[in-house]
Length: 467
Image (cartoon, rainbow, N blue to C red; front, side, top):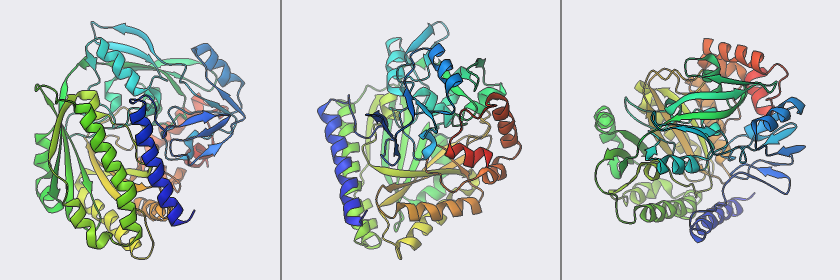
C-alpha cells in the first residue's frame, strides 16, 4: 500500500468509525473484531482468514464438547488484538453467546459473569445493583476473559494497577474439556491471567465490586522536564496518572483520574465523545499528514502547545473507559519504574532517528504505571516489580512496521517485558525465558499439564511457548 493510500485509508476508516458510533448512539462501531460470512478479522482488519470451523457455544457443556472434538482451538473475544493470537489452526470460538450473569451475592458485593461478557455490559450489570469495578482498562469493548488473558492494566501509583485485582475466583477449562475453579493463590489462576489462552479457557469470572463512585478526569499540558522533576509527587497526589510524550518536543500531556464526591459534569459523556473523536480525527488527518510531509520536527512543539487544561466529572466507568475510534497500532512493554525516563527517551530518539531516513507515520508514547507486588500472574508484564508501561502508539499506515521492528530489537536489548496482547512479532520462547525465568518455567509446566494435546496452540503461541 502506498503512503498516500495508507494515509487516506487510516483517516477515512477513523472518520467512518466516529460517524457510525455517533449515528447509532454508541450501539455500533466499525473497528471491532468479528466473523462475517465465514471470514474472521481482528479490530484493525490486519488479520483476515477463514477458520475451518467457527462456533459460538452458549453453554459450558457445548464449549467442553468443542474442546474435546477440535484439533486446535483459539478464542476470538472482541478481536481487540494487535497480533495473530486470534488466528486458529482449526476451530475459532467466540464466547459472545456465553455471556451474562451467572449469580450475585450482593451482601459481599460479588457478581459472577460468564467470561464472554463485554466490559461495557458487565459495567451496566454492576451499576443496576449500585456497584462498580474498582478500576478498569481504557477500552470497553473487550470481554472479561480477554482482558484477564492478557492481564490488562490501568495506571496508578501505589494502590491499584490490574483488573485481576478485582477478581476473587476464576473457572478455567483445560484441553480435555475439564473445568477447574481457582482462586488468586492457585498456580492455575496465575497461569491463566496473562497466559493468552495457552493454559486454558477462562469461562467464569467472579468480580469483587465496590460502591458506585464518580471520577474527575483531568488533562493538563506540561513539559517533560517538569514531569521528570515531579513524577513521584504526581503519582502520590493522584489516584491514577498517565503521560503522553511526543517526538521532537519537550511538550507533554499529564492525564489524571481521581475519586470525587462532586456532581457529574453536565453532558459529560457527550463532551468526552466530542473531545476523543476530535483528537482521533486530528491524529489521523493532520498528524499523519504532517508526519509524511516531514514537518514534525518543525511543527510538533507548536501543535502540542495548543493543548489546554480541561476536566470532567463522570461515572467511574465512563471516566476510565473510552471507545477507540482511531485506526492505530500499539506496541507495549514494561521496564522497572526507576528506568522510566531513560527508556522513554531512548524510544523517542529511536523514532526521531528513523524518521529522518524513513517516512514514518504519526506516533506518540503513552506512559502508565503499576505498583509493586502484583502476584496474580506468572508471565504478565507487570508481575511483582513496580513497573512503567511504555506504549508506542502509531497510526496504522505504511512505515509502522519498520518502526516497531526496530523497537522490538531495542526492547530485547534492555530486557523489557512485552505485553502479549499488543504488537509482538519478534519475541520467541527464549526471550520470554530471559525476562520471566523461573516464572516462565512454571508456566510451561502448567501448560504441559493442562494442554497435553496442544489444543490451544497456534503459530503465535508456538513461537512464544513451544519452539
